[in-house]
Amino acid sequence: MADGYDLVRRLGMAAVKMDGAYYKCAKKLGINENMLDLLYALDDGAPHTQKQVCGDWLIPKTTVNTNVRELVASGRAELLPAEGREKTIRLTDEGRRFADEVMRGVHMAEEAALAKTVERFSAEFISALEYFADCYGAEVERLAERSGKERPR
Image (cartoon, rainbow, N blue to C red; front, side, top):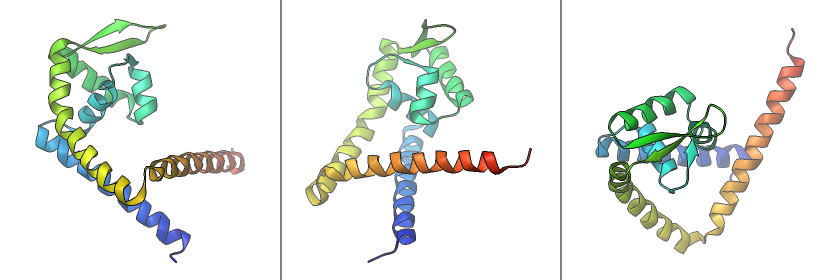
């Protein structure tokens, strides 16, 4: 059996391949990968603030802002007042059509890949991946806290 290092490398390479596939998909669709991420975030139909998109999708604030401004300028989104200074991003009808067109192919590819994977490994692999991501995130936070305390001031 492979040791922990080899398993984590394989997991990392799988994540890189997935990111690469989304990058290639975005390029084929004529948009940048950050716009694809933003459309993906907005695709659920729920209201989202820029802050929520940044936090949930780990996209830098300036990147989200740039892409939101592009959607607003093209008439594909509008910004509505939210709590405090935040604004909620809402796709217009034109934006909804654009997002549907962009996301259709992405979702078809995802569903085909998921069906093959679940057939072979069961849907439990998703829970395992989520668990790993949560554990890894917690370990990174602990490491950052320890590093911050040990650093000379």
